[in-house]
Picture 1 (tube, rainbow, N blue to C red):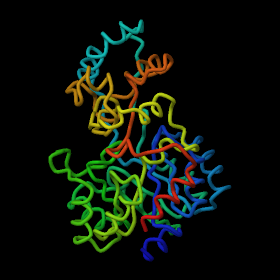
Picture 2 (picture 1 turned 120 degrees about the vertical axis):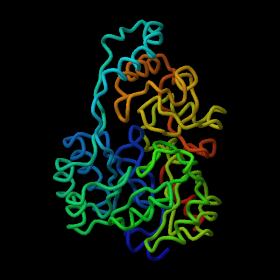
Picture 3 (picture 1 turned 180 degrees about the vertical axis):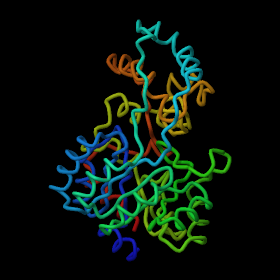
Picture 4 (picture 1 turned 60 degrees about the horizontal axis):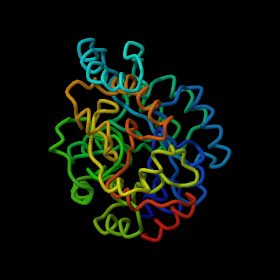
Length: 346
């Protein structure tokens, strides 16, 4: 525990998981002020937006925070698959009174690149984390040049060993229970994925770097369970989704507070990549993993108008209601109170 707290520069070995679309600098700052590691998700931010968020965060937390980026390979557009995707969505567009011909296209998310590194370098955060592997060796060297501690997610032991060998200072063991996008990058075979506790123990035995448990942890008891298996710390996301400082949408908050939150599943329908969220109309009607969905992150654009239309009517039918399997345990309250409650597990 001392090793991780020293490495991350925090009082408590707790990391608030970066949650793109549901938070900004306010949540990360509140967690940092409570003694844990606040995280800023940057995968959906332009360089200009990233700079604004970092300025806000730095004013509250100095350099004691984590900034998270995706490391996926940008896909080539596939006209045939895009056409199949639009054909699948067309009846829902018609029902909503929308024109499928006007549906947008494009990625919506870009992997970590030189432009992001340029902005980041001016702020020199203590921690930088990645999802879907690590960036190119040149970009990774650039991040490490200012002394940043590098974290990345592993969903299998093989991925953990790969991350350790390629420069990760800390490995996040992302169990199958975790909400949001799966961080797998060596294999897309979901049968290789395992639960948090099984993964944590195997990674602790296999690696020399600290292992952080993530997935299904939403209270102090979950923290204690992960630490008992040798984790150096924990990463928690879903428990913060209903916090005062989160920017979680009204329909998302309502779903988290309802019995609907007890049923989550993996789906590719919102982005093209497996991610865990609360089961809703879109997942049931379009299929949890439809073959027509374009490769990540190209699926997002065309479904976005359906989401906007539904949310304008107070419905989360087409919204990605990302949440882990402990979603029903999350509560309203300040991020500080949530952090201190979780810290009791240490």
